[in-house]
Amino acid sequence: MSTGEHLIDEILKNDKLMSIDNCPGVPVNIGLAVYGSVQDDKGGVVIEPTDKDLSSAINKAIGFSGANSETSVWHFQIGKPTHHFVVIPWYRHSTPDYGQVYTVFMAWENAYTVQQYVNGSDPAPDIGGTGFKHVWTVSELNKMLTDLMTKDSAWEDYFGQVGQSRASKLEYWKYKTMSIDKAVSNVTAFSD
Image 1 (cartoon, one colour):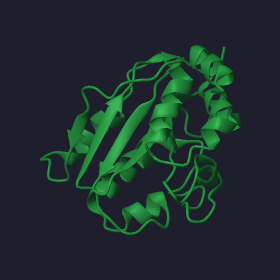
Image 2: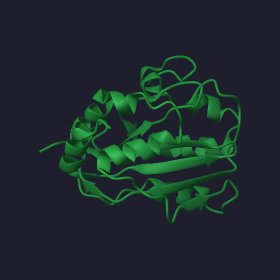
Image 3: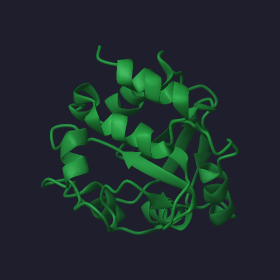
C-alpha cells in the first residue's frame, strides 16, 4: 500500500512536473499526472480578506475529509496580481507531524521552475520555513493562507523575490478525492 510520502516522492522524481516553468501549468499538469486526466476549475470558492470570519473560511479551505489512504489535488489562485499553486493533502503515518499534512508545489513564470522551488534556488524562497518542504502542518498552511491575505510581505515570504503584494482574494478548487495507490500509479506513468 502506498503512502502520501510515496506520492510526493513520485512527483519529485518526475522530470516533466519538475520542469514546469509557469504558475498556471502547475495545477494543470499535476492534476493531469495525479488523476490521469485534466481536471476542471468549476465551482471555485472565493475568500476575501474582508470576510467576516476569515479564519473559518481558511479552515474550511484546508479541511480534507478523505481517508488516511486518500489524497487530492487542490488548485489555489491568489489575486491580484495572479499566482497559482497546488496543495496536496495526505495523511502522515509517522511522527513528527502525525496526521493530516500537506505538500505545496508552485512555479513562477520567468523566474523559477517547480524544481527550482523545490531546491530553494534564488529567486524562489529558501527551502523549509516558508519555502518548499515535504510536510506542511495544518497550522503552517493556515498561517500561509492567512498571511497571503493579510501581510504585505507575505508574497515575498512564500513565493520568493517576486515583489511585495497582498492578495485581494483567494480562490480554490478541490479536485476529487482518490486513493493514494492510484495517484502514485498515475504519476509514475505520467511522462507526456
